[in-house]
Picture 1: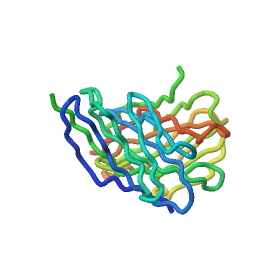
Picture 2: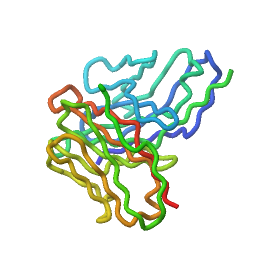
Picture 3: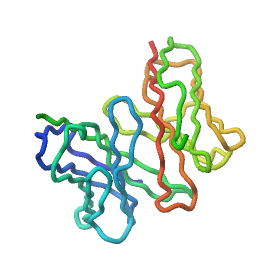
Picture 4: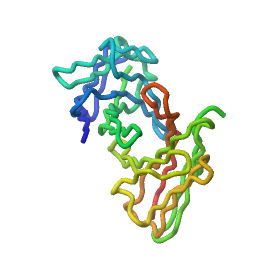
Length: 115
Length: 115
């Protein structure tokens, strides 16, 4: 069974500073990897996804993530954070299961942005 | 409407009452998923439909929970004899078979509070 670990529960960064959110996954084969963002009271919005190809993936809102197979990691980065990026971020791993894709989420990292 | 919608957005009920939530997926999507998200956690898979067939249920889905998707369009999730532990955000997602990554698109969720 697949699993996801997001070791940072809460991160605070200054507006304009760079950001890196950590994600480690466990899965026997090549996984589908996702990062979602959730604003308070809202559903999840997909930021980016990876399955194969270039290990550096570009997403929406200026985010990118790098897949490192040797480290089982898929960390999310942004070079300059905006106040509107304050939200909760979820890393997820997807795997084929009985004909559909079973997605397992991490526990999330809450991002606070200070002026 | 181009997204997944859920109704109601908020529901407050007393312990022991029955509640029903509705999810309208993206119109051409044949797969529909229900997740539960409690405070401080990522979404956890509850159940999955392909068209009108319910193909998988998590062990989290006790016998007080029932989900339907008549005619393969909208879906309902009913909780009977609610308990305080049922308080959570219930998220619905849909996807289209055969698309890259089988990306799941999430609705805004229904927040349930059981008093």
